[in-house]
Image 1: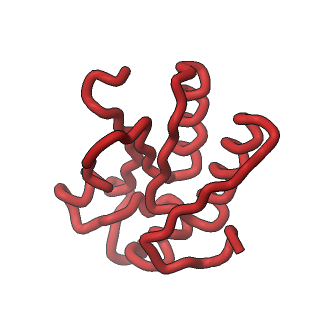
Image 2: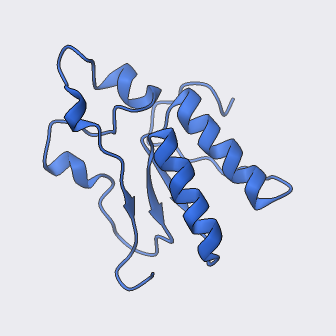
Length: 116
C-alpha cells in the first residue's frame, strides 16, 4: 500500500530495524514512486547529512526537525511549480518537459531557524 499512488496530503510512518534501513526505504520509495516532500526527525548530525543526501538524490524536498509552521515548498513562491519535477510525484501531475525546462528542477532541505 505504501508504494501505491495516494492523493494527499498523506503521511506515512513505517518501522525498520535500523535508521539506515528506514532511510534507504523512504528515499527509494520517494525516488521510485514519488514524494512531494519528506520530513526527518533526528538529533544525529551524521544521519541528518545522510538523509539530506538521500532525499536530494531522490528529488524530494526535505524538512528537518519540524516543530512549528513551515512552508511546504519555498520554490512554489518563485515559479509555477509546487514540486521538484525530479520524481514521479511531480512529473506525473504537475510538470512535463514540453512546459517546464530543467532550470526549474529544484530540491531543497529546510531547517527551523537556529536548529543546526
